[in-house]
Length: 187
Image (cartoon, rainbow, N blue to C red):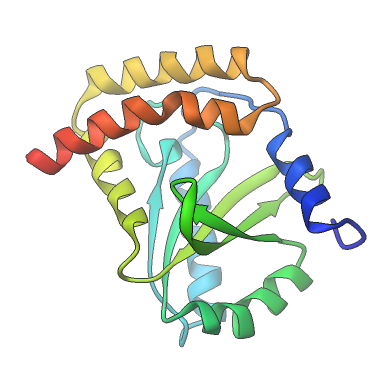
């Protein structure tokens, strides 16, 4: 999709795509399962573990209708050699992205539907990545309905405010995510 664009043009386009928050969809877990089955079947020697995280992994949480996946891989060298060529050939967008806005970098893929809408964000990380902390946040929300409601309202307000600025939207949620992750860590 972006083959003729420079890396910077691809990044600029990706971060300005519209943010839409929708009510929870009970089909999201199955969409995760389908993609997880595809990835683990296609790359069984490189992929070690796959987790559904983010808002679509929490029942009753309004979310961008994009399935977030944490994928443990053997190494980034293996991802570059064995996964990137296959997924990019299949139309996935591919970027090296910093963890929590600073290095280390990890492999990130965007899967899109036939209309060009994002359907999945696939974060390929190693076993020692700090990104696994995202599961603390997910698990806390899964057991605290009051926080689910608050977070859903927060995201709706931020999406209206930063409709075409994914970076600002994400940064504006960061403090809440940090607070909940720390609460979960203390449990």
